[in-house]
Length: 278
Image (cartoon, rainbow, N blue to C red; front, side, top):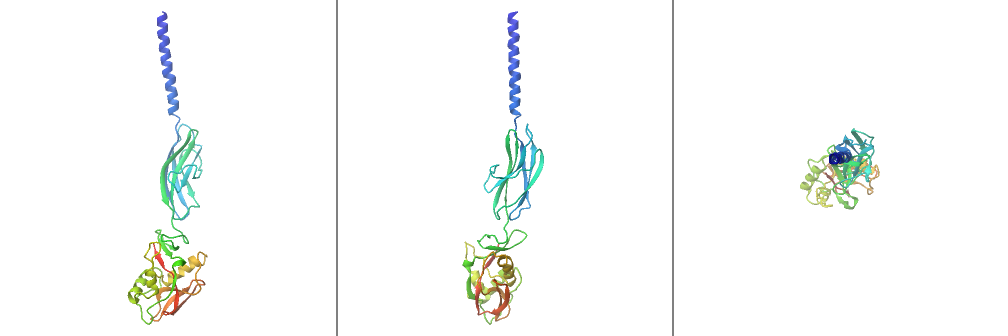
């Protein structure tokens, strides 16, 4: 009889150990962090972007805080720039502001519950250029197109004073229109050789870039409107040559200090400031 009781006690003890052991294991396995997804980044500008994320599973505890963390270095966490966007399950978004232009950022969605913080997958994006910002060649950006490209103005350290060139010779084919400066420069270099304002720009090498050219008259106007008027750069007294011819003896120029436009003899010596497209 005693042996039977001992046998039952032993069986009970084994069952109890297994039961409570499994219960403890189940408790540990249930202590999960949230499951987070960083969905996408959209509407990127020079200083802002919209980011979207989703909490797929709260774990075994309610999500107390969710949002995004971002940095210019990979694997950002809540110790970096961070947003807080409500609680619980579901999708959410945030508008990032105050970003640096032409800068690569890394971003992750995150969620925090009673067990800790979990992060979603990492997404990287690059902010766009901005007017007045530094271009790829180190010049000042004065125009941006819808595709993220634009035009930049060579720094003042690269400007010189020269004649327009080809005095008395008609250079057929130049235009005053925006977007024609590069073609104008090529035409002038072919017609006038190496002694012209256009060839000075064509020969310029700055920061390793060799694709500079003399702006057209309308491109000069845009430099005045987007660079001089906002006070983003200072220009020399006097005028700057454009690549737009008026007659065989005169070419268009603009005083970038005050915005006055006129045509002067090609033999006059005026300032030259190159531009390039990117």
